[in-house]
Image (cartoon, rainbow, N blue to C red):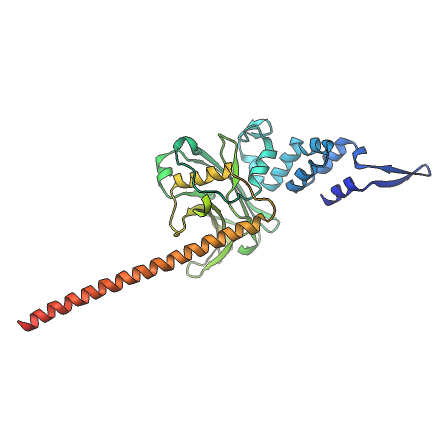
Length: 327
């Protein structure tokens, strides 16, 4: 991308028939430039190029270019029904709109939107892509019925694996995993990134012989954390579980209704620009610190209650014993 932008700013000198001529990038045929742009893997640079001039704006808006960019970023989108530049689940915005929704991380929001059934997605499409280094380990699409009373009232959870795990072509280092979990509302065409690209934590569970890499994004004004977890079996070297759950500030589960409210707000809200990863990391750290502080406070309160109850029980025992002795 840098070479294309440099060419746009610097003229190319060449000798033709013994004379020096100057050729600008605008003189290159449009179909040649389109082929060059379709090899890009940087959507932000492609969008920035479209702001340079009207000619570049038309080239940067090429639907096929954005389609190739989206499929290179999220191979699982090949299995999403109705996803095309003419409409379908993208709501007419095409792959360019999808990329603008799904690639940036969601920005800080005010809080949960009203949980009216008419405002919540009735169906969610999850596009899940798991990589280890440059190797794609899994690309899968999961469709979830989000309108049932069971889903709305139960703790939110979506599983991306339908079988008992899978083996990787090489040993897995959980810290080197990257995960993309995109949530799409087919009715509106809006999408949101529901996972951090790199793990926010890697926890070893020694007794179970597992390592869990967590890719967490905080939504709903810091109220809800979407926790995408990848569980790796240390003994057999394969992935046992890929799931998306949610927890509140106290570490408890969150109902499907409340998660849908946070997701709907994030879909309609702003996205992070520069420094998105750092901002998302700070939000997660603040969420984790608050959760840890509340757990400590609750443990102290429970300890105080236990001490009080023990004191009352001891006093009652002494009273009964004294009464029996005096008799």
